[in-house]
Image 1 (tube, protein in one colour):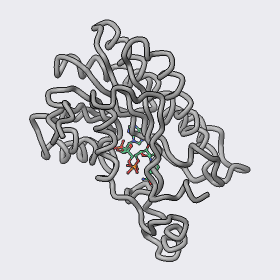
Image 2 (cartoon, protein in one colour; image 1 turned 30 degrees about the vertical axis):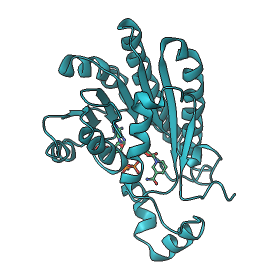
Image 3 (cartoon, rainbow, N blue to C red; image 1 turned 45 degrees about the horizontal axis):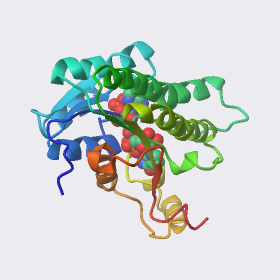
Length: 250
Ligand code: NAP
């Protein structure tokens, strides 16, 4: 199926590894140009080797507003236009909420909510100024659907990202800008290292998932591509859960 993503320009944050790297590769395979943002320069350089004509690595710290606010302009300057955003960068600090510093919450909100908001707003201004349609995909989490113990900052931030998705979708539909979210369950990335490296914890974790496995990063990318594509033009304000059945059985 032609997703009509050829020559389209997309920003993917958190592209240096995990879900973001898989999404970047998939979009470049579809013929899109990808501005791939993260902090780790060496990981981004390796990713660029996958398709150096279509992947542009950009070092950017999502907790620094000044760095984040320049990404949309950078994509336009480098590739001549901008069509889509994938707000994927995220952190999930494990915390004991009785003792954890408020700085944990502040930093999590900066990376998981404020940065996606800034990128969405700067991209939307570009779409409106150019009178063109645009698509924004926010990578949330099933932890944003319900609060989870030891993840107060993370669950709060992903819940906020889901409400942000709905609000912006409702507000910007009149401009032809679509905003959707994906809520992954457990995926095999470095974010799950503590689970993957301990056989007992992993066994207990998999028991909660009807398919008895974690997702692989490549299983997120096609849904992202669908949401960026004009073929999903009537889809906005939605959240797609990809979790091997974990949420549906609760
Ligand atoms: P990951 O392997 O830990 O990768 C996180 C990505 O975010 C990296 O590319 C990292 O790049 C980037 N990042 C983190 N902090 C950043 C900062 N301050 N500035 C710029 N980039 C930053 O995580 P993942 O599993 O691929 O997760 C991707 C997204 O999916 C996240 O939003 C996560 O919450 C969500 N998610 C994941 C799972 C899962 O099970 N894996 C489940 C639900 C939701 P640098 O370190 O190079 O900056």
